[in-house]
Image (cartoon, rainbow, N blue to C red; front, side, top):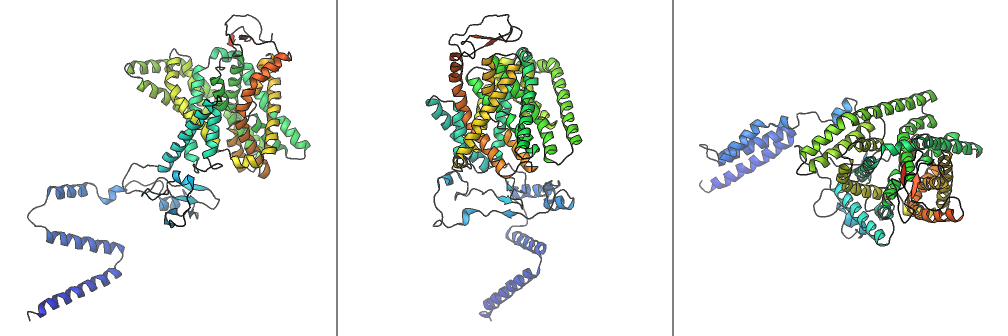
Length: 580
């Protein structure tokens, strides 16, 4: 009997295990968890003495009592799948999830240089999932569902920003050493690392969003340097002349489309599209040449600001041209934008005279030892006004420029500019590099003949029309031609207009590709166009189109504007009309 007892014990233990496994197959998931929990509790109670518990066990029990499982996800998640569909806040669709490349065998993987910048590596980093819907829209998931609130880290965004910043730095250094504008280096660097180049940065949405701060701070700094006195001098040509330029482009392109047998709506859109100039690129060039205070610089800047204000009106006009809304509805939308714009500027004007000086003086008193708080307050003020402008249906660019003008009326404008300049330079380079990523080098090279001809035609037409409009307001030939050549490119915001028009089926197919390539090549050739301006000015003097270089340009009321063409710069007060 003594020898049979071990055998019977083993047999009973095996039967118990078999019964447990059979029972586990019949249990559902909740019963299985309960069974496992009870078993582990029983084992724990058997393995530990009953008379006492450790201090860690006491803490664990207290935490379990305080933070129950129901409390962890007590709040309703706005992104919950079942809740969103049940409450009709979302539409149930089929999506495709792109497989990770981590399962590929190492023998099948070929080395590519862009894999250095790819996060799909073997170091244990999480791969960012990618979803594609039925309309081929690609979505990058970066906010993973977590049981507890944790600090998320988007490794893809960090990697892309590192690539963009380093490449922009290298491009700027290379072109600076070659004596060329650094803007060209930023644009070229972006085109090399973008989807049209080596594809180091394939997902550009987040990078472009961060880079948008470059335009915001660029216009904010411009507003800080902008003089309302000089703005009053050029307000006629900037406001009336700027609107006249847009209307002329729309009218001429609409008539041309009708004569060629095309749709007049497409022609009107192309005219509005071509009337836009690059605010960021032109301002960067004017700042590099110290021409922002010159007469042609003031007229150019005023026209650019007017174009930014007109963006909201053009967006309201697109549904009318696309046939998705009636003419009356389009006019009502444009009237609404105008009323909101006037009210917004009126409120900002009141605040600039009352609240802004007090706020800046308060920040200065609180920042007596360090400028950190004043710098942060300046950035916050700029972003708040820009955000308010965007929420009202206006543009971020208009709001940021208005924020700078509000501070420019105070005594702390120069101090604020000194605090903002490093931030402005960094984000401006990031923005220009992101614009370069939209340029597909292979596409430009494949269609370089027709695109180059289109760019030359655009430069000639825009220069001629803008020069004629500025000349019509009584400015001399030199100033008119300088403004015309400065605004002869197509702006980066035209990409947004083109995308919106494509969604409304206003432009399709070959016209879309032609406008896209022309805009991209126009931005690339802008640097060359600015390099040609001194030669054109010299040729104009030889042909006696305008008088020789002078050190002073004079406004309509005798105000002095500095000219950068002379080697010696002299300030002389001249009380003569500006058309002399």
